[in-house]
Amino acid sequence: MSNIQDKVVIITGASSGIGEATAKELASKGAKLVLAARREERLKKLQEEIQSNGGKAIYKVTDVTSDEQMEELAELALKEFGKIDVMINNAGLMPLSPVFEKKIKEWDTMIDVNIKGVLYGIAAVLPFMRESKEGHIINISSVAGHLIGPAGSVYSGTKFAVRAITEGLRKEEAVNNIRTTIISPGAVATELPEKISGEELKSGIDEFYKVAIPAESIARAIAYAIEEPSDVAINEMIIRPTIQE
Ligand code: NDP
Image 1 (tube, helix red, strand yellow):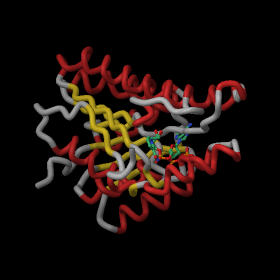
Image 2: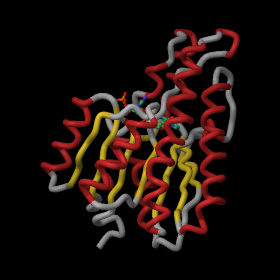
Image 3: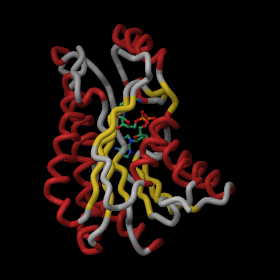
């Protein structure tokens, strides 16, 4: 039996890309899923697909930038399934632009979703995980959390922050038997680059994404981290297309 069987897993950003692929992968291994994002139709469709394949999933329309909504999400998981084994803070945005262009709204959104959303997700599940002396928090960073490219200052800033927060959390919560995992994907074929507003930048990004690997590659890595026995923590993984420099 898979070590994922009957684990209760919350996934933010489950309405597309990596979150959606992860939901399908974990459902096929017997997880009980709580799916979160803002686009209800997508969540509903995913829930129905998982259920028609014999899996278990519920969903809640959630904006990760709302501390209250994240608390309600954790409460729903506890009410429906009685526990939370894994929290996957995956929701994120990448509207790249040079700092000089001063796209303050985009900076704010990236900071709110990519950093604060992760913090709110952690804070929502931590009391329960500490009490049960067990849990696993998986945060999605990026290769941009290791390297900085032009137009990536703010996005990289948020993804470096995700790594820093996760490592800090590891130091604080290892004593409570809570595992932490940082996932840093390279180019993955999802809707993520569609949020880039600068036309010139878009063509360069299209070139970068030519080698992109499917979201299922990241889903399998996440499943592996969860599947390890609870005394083994996969703290960090970088998953790139083999031919990405
Ligand atoms: P997608 O654009 O396909 O997915 C992003 C998800 O985030 C969507 O489900 C979206 O749902 C959700 N989201 C965005 N804003 C919010 C919000 N305020 N509240 C709740 N959910 C939100 O991209 P990916 O699957 O690629 O992105 C997933 C993660 O992977 C991100 O953190 C991204 O930075 C990271 N990543 C991706 C890489 C890639 O090449 N694709 C590379 C490295 C990292 P909705 O709009 O319905 O709310």
